[in-house]
Image (cartoon, rainbow over all chains, first blue to last red; front, side):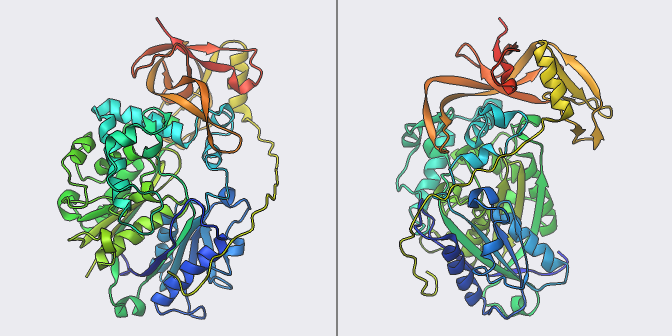
Length: 380
Length: 153
């Protein structure tokens, strides 16, 4: 990395199906809290990157009236119309350019406002798939789940087990809105059938919320009490879902390889202590184990069965509950970075793990994880 | 959390706006749909790497090259993946139950390198299953002229 950049502060709202709040107030809460925790005021010099979506927010240039609550008036501000991990990436790039030392990153959306599964249909090919109304985020994910499970003999019980783990983990996270202490695979498999092999409890259900993070280089980073250093980052963009093999997460694999190379990680399975993975569906977490190099190709199911990714395992994944615990379009990947940073700082409360020195966080955008970004974070 | 910012009841009212878009299917998809009217499957081919796209794409992502060649594909293909759909997305964006479950398959047409997502008749599906395309030139909506697939045997 050309400059040493650290996560200085963060804030999250509770994530819930209907926050009964305006998005401006949700953003104001997290922006004020993150800036205050970093010791910053609006008159200080910083850049702002938000992540939000015109379709979800029901207006074009959806960041336009976020300028006030995002403390972005007359600042160098723009948005990523993607997952919040991309907003973090763009903020990082601005700092690496040398033009800025500090970036405020914000992700938000409100599922209580938009028609839940329509934005995903709007992602599909407008000259064919979108018109035919067969592909949506869940049916597309089901095609990927079947392709992956068939290729490597992964069972529905293993996929359901991931959902149960994350719902149980979420029960220890006061901000997660989708939680079930003691959830098990049978319960998940018995939930409403949507598109086989996907049932309702395997889906990261969209909800309302916002989160914010301050990253910095230079003086603010050097003086910070508990900086979490960004050791590596990688991102990649794969083909549209019908034009690639769905048996693996190609963009996540490539992004991880780049991030690991930058962070000097050669054996992620032993060098990474914890991961927060943006899994829109339970099977995606199994696929992510493989793409992130935690196990070999096709070994995601067996790696899960080993217990390694449980809270008390050797490489806990989504101790926060992950996206299944709380999924805010445009914020979920940023929340993964924040949760990973919380673990490194020892601020994760009831879901804190014993050892979190090096952590990985991922974000994704597009059907079947078409685009991925990976952050490698480390403490002192 | 947060420095004393109260979140109260938010009045909610419907404030509808319904913009209309006029997408063109473009020359490549136009040729695809014209072919279906005659019961034929036309795919575009990359002159660089030979990658065959069905539905046809204008630009090959692998070669950064315009796909100016056309190939007619046979009616047969192979199921790459499938899902049994119990629901569909309703106009309000929520899932609604289908009267009968249906199979949505991802099919690679013989000779193609990309896949088509379509309904599969017959109720049974497996990865690797051989299928034949069902074309309906009379489809009410032209995007459904590629009506789906049926088992080859």
